[in-house]
Image 1 (cartoon, rainbow, N blue to C red):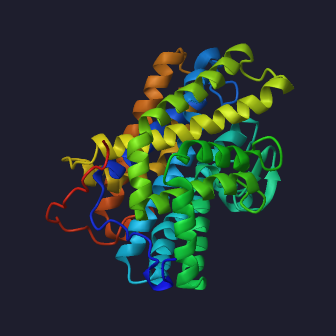
Image 2: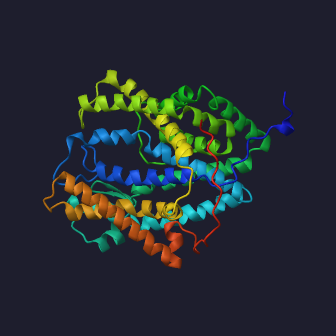
Image 3: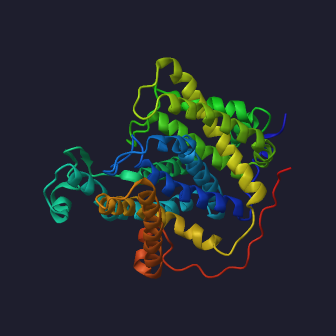
Length: 403
């Protein structure tokens, strides 16, 4: 048996992985298209007045099962890199509380409130925005159909911050030997031929806790979501620190892609037969849940493998786009809601409205980032360092381990 003193997980890779940067950028760009498209579905948020597009849910279901899981896994991967860079877990926790907590507070108090206000106006709310801010926005009660104060899309930051705190507390509280054991057990479980079946089973189990999958965004009671998203966060953390797991993903991304596509095929078939708000027959429910788990895990593994194999190279816009991701995320949904209300009575059909919304959200969110990054006191409010980062020497990309 190996002596305890030699039990060590593989240290995190010392260089920046450009492929993961591009994957993160792509994931957030996809999020903009998803949120815009969501408004055109029967289950959309604040659906435009010209009605819904019956088939719009089918392409969105190609993203729905895995888009958030991917974002949490990427965040876990980045957290492992940052934790290695910082002196210890306490320093890492302090830095993350500042980089996530300050923009979260700013977003909840300044950026998010226009969204529930526009929803209330659509439901007959008669007061102006100033009255709303002073009397209702932070009243901790239900106004018409809105539970206030609203968190909207910033629930993602709340969950990410919670998982980061939990990770750091575990790093500080657990003895080093326990942490090493947990790392090795997780690595042996996933780094091998069982990566795909075990991963699909774990995702299916996490999403099935408590019966039908729900994603309530209520942090104290959203148990299934915490198992799913928290588990994906830990998977990304492990992947960054594990050479064997990294090589397994590099070998298996092609069959993982086929699994993801097969899962999506079943999900799309169900949506074709039972579109919109038509109730899915009970006999379809468990196969559908399993198909979504397969689609999720297969797609996430495939995208990590693709990022490593094909995207691990620098580019002229990479650093700027990486910096812009968080500010754009903070602003994008509020921009979308405001523009959609301005468009709703313009008489546009679905395609022009979709294109105008996509362009407006992209441009508006980008301008929010450009303005915020140039004003020193505003930079921490949108998730940037207070001082601009000086130009660095070009980093060495991590060699791909894919076959």
